[in-house]
Length: 411
Figure (cartoon, helix red, strand yellow):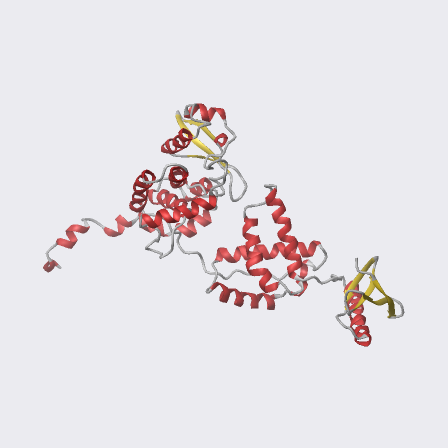
């Protein structure tokens, strides 16, 4: 620790002391508020200037104490890094929420770059308004309602830490608003596009080189088919699925393959899936040398503590995303021609939701419960499908071909 220089100067009738350290030319001030000793730099080399700055610091601290305000003002980036560490520590021991990863990304990418050098207790609505303008410039457009919710939640986590540490009061936290645009309809696949995809995957697997490429393609093919036929989330839910999480339940005389998944909310839910999903899972089992000596039903009964979609125990989340993108490009399905956006594995979840809604098989509430989301989200993102389902009522009688080939003079 740096040693204090020999010379010190008492100020404010001995209630504070100016001193220097051997490692810096600046004067520091040491004073006591309540039972706590506090040290600040004056950032001044000249003693007379340092004395004036120090007196302001001490008087301001005493005013804050008298009016029950935080004594120490800390930079936002310091508090934000504490918030990040706490969330990461929980994630490392698998106790943190999935959303913590998104909060950490937002804090590093947007919040620290803008708010970093502000004292956390000085961030008011005027500063927030400047941030909103800056964010639009950085993102090249207005962020979505969902994105702003994530930003606000991340910012509030930093404020919570600041309050806990005594750097600001709850009454100083600005009220955050969300004026982002409502997300557009989710990208998915049409039934014809999905058929094109699964037919192309057969050839894609056959053309793979023996060895790791063949293993990865086989696994990704079955991964895609399971996602599209169950609606579970790629990554969070699928990659955490183990054989012991798969059971068979009998409902009204029907054996139902049941997946027990846990994802975004950390709350487990049991979903009954189509019978064909069993065949996709069985193919994975048959390729696994540790499991293929059992029958599929023996495997389910054994409740094996082993992940379903991992290769050699390795989480394939990132790899599958990149390979799936290449697969879609080869199959000429990468870009959704309706939105102009590139598809991802998550589009398979949206495909499932779209299919269930257009079929009219279940209510939006039942679908929301099944997919582990809210009915509001289902209604918000898929409401356009209600009109699509009623299309025959709008179209009326007859068929399109006859309308096109009909005598042009008839109308």
